[in-house]
Image (cartoon, rainbow, N blue to C red; front, side, top):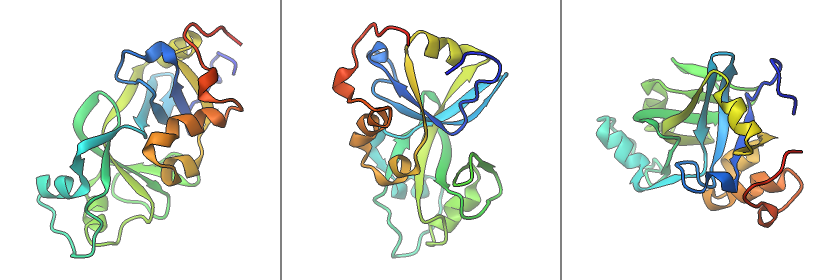
Length: 190
């Protein structure tokens, strides 16, 4: 990938390399939602919060639910920034009050109306509840990629919505054409 002004990371995965073994991003797969000269924003799609479910989110927000709603759904930690801020990463089936279309098939929504709809089985068919986000100031993510902190690959909907959390990092790496066992610290530049 060329590192110049045309680099656009929207709708890509940033896959953490072993260089990030002591950080919030250990074995992370970040789905990049926005990227411009001002910086980048993405959501980690493979770090579940083991002590929180969708039922907890609805309870915290005082949202009543229908009896048949899947309340055991796992909530993810999207990154170290604003962990109290919620996002729903979902298939683009309709728009909500505050929806950002990332690509033709995926969007991210941060307004409460989508949660209200989900609480009554009227939300998107495929969705992830995510707290917090990952963000980079202007030029920072590009520098981290140049330092081999991240591998970049086009995002795949089936990894976001159809792969178990524990397998997403390995599947994302396999989409590059090699196995995660082949990664090592201090990787060279291609």
